[in-house]
Image (cartoon, rainbow, N blue to C red; front, side, top):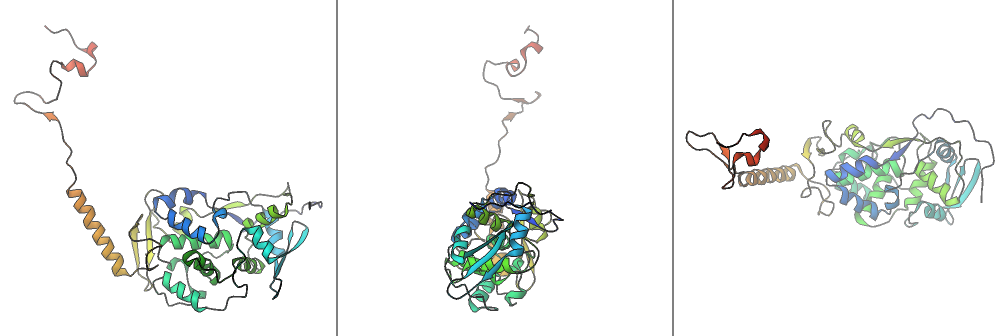
Length: 342
């Protein structure tokens, strides 16, 4: 077994390093918004089911050393990754790296070109034909809430991006697998490329899985990361829901390609469904759906069974609740407060 025998390095300022914690919104809001089933479908298709329930602590020094030392060597015949777990240097084949992460090693590992046709078509298909390039696209432009939430989840938990507002070809490659079931892109290589890029340090989930795979003990002096929650507060900051939304009363902010926005109470299973023919909607289709829904709600309210009041009023007598024959009023009250009948 490999062991870290060196003294731990001093841990400085944590800065922006945070771990991702799915908990609150997953357990409550995805249910109240009606997107839970669709989200799980996307997660399962992408092969990420084990990540959703992984609430283990992530650690500062483990993550910092791992990410800062990470390199991806995409050679033609045997691509490898190299990194450090604490002070232990490790080199492994890309295939083993994928095995450690629980991600299928299939698809091309070549670098994705700028604006590849298939991913650009996918972006336009999920954003209502937003005409911007992928590099200038926003996750907020995705129209169906389950797909949008999945994209935010990929950005925070899997790809470990600091900027979780912009979309990228990496997001779209994961979305392509999740929506179509096809695997033209090697997801493990995308994670490796993301880790090898320089920038703010995220990636605690990946580092922890590698540590577990290699059976290296955790440094007892390491410091847990502050959870980076994808909760309702985060969704408000991303303008996913209105600022006055609550866990039990979510109002979705749906953005159209022309910049107009419509607020839609959730859940809307008849409107937002990833199994529908199109993964985006026109304003006209949304407005028509909401009008029909409003009509049915009003119609159901008008035809609701009236509530019945069984209180009977007699002339010159105070009203009283119906009593069984032979029972006095004292039957319904504390009999000790009544005097004997004359």
